[in-house]
Length: 216
Length: 251
Image 1 (cartoon, rainbow over the protein chains, first blue to last red):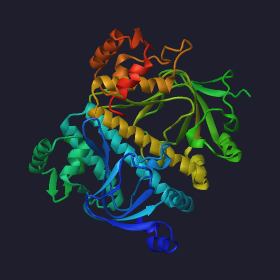
Image 2: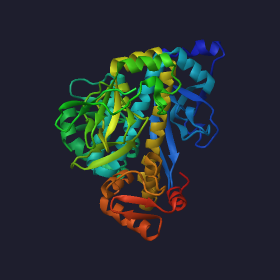
Image 3: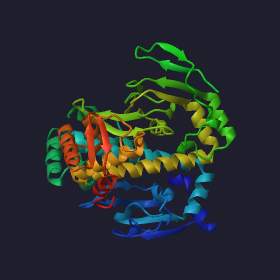
Image 4: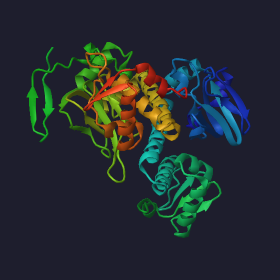
């Protein structure tokens, strides 16, 4: 998506603004007045919501994605989640609501991409809902990793034969699958010793996707 | 104007019926969010390319795992969207009613349906082919914007549901499920009886709890005079109290 957005040209026209954020910085907070849409040029953000008992991670925004789109149409004009920069310095381009809608109107390819990303986020959230009700930890782990691998590899085309690379930390996997870190470590150890998975820093390599899928 | 509609009976035998009137899109009074704000010309184009079908109660409109060939717009009736888990256990994801659109996410994301849509009562449903819809989407910024808004609301709803299932106590979840059903289906003419016939299992699925827990919680609500249970009918006696329980944590 990054190739569709000419940041220097936009800035030259006085359209939008650019800013660098450090890990821990918030782009916006849940309940804040709506400030617009943010495009992640480089970096990673975590989208969180406040729950009855604790904060919960909804999803992670990667380079080339927008965040703040959901609240664009909110009647109360408030952000419905918090966006926090994580891991490293993030370079972010900010559109006001009016600017973003104008930008969307002129770029149908961006519209398509925004639509697809929203669909994928909904799919991820529904998978988590479904897993938390119906599935045991082992199935949740496999389903989540498979879901992430389908998304990741459709972006990066890193599938090589049966091996599939998933860029994801253990913490992220624990949050998204709803499994405790302790239990997840046990599962990862088991899958690694059975040669179904290789664990590297911030990524997993599924050695044989089909076999992995069948190991539920 | 009375239109002939195709009806698929349970053994898939095609027959026709004259008594159902599904108007053209230019005259449809359903407030469909996806087609909101479109010009008459655009609606007329949709009318020319749409199909109109009747699905009897219990019939499947589309199956999880199949690939979409278009969109479905509900003119009349109620539809249940559900998934099947590993041990064949059904999980209701949501309900859809008049004016709502089905199957758009699979179409937009170019994937198979990730749930099954089943008619909960006799439904009159319009079908717009994939080609017709995609052509309209490419030519119409308003339609794209409506799609983004629709999906944004869906994401918000899913996130709220995830939060509830992960953190809200059972009682609050059942109360919220009742509110969802009231919003979705409304009341019968008496102003108290939920206009939907659902089993305890189905209510449990909406709340993300077992059937036994759903039965127990609904019985508690019955004892507390928040609702009255009459077979599969639910009478809402104290809406404000139910709302208070559902929103106990400010959601």
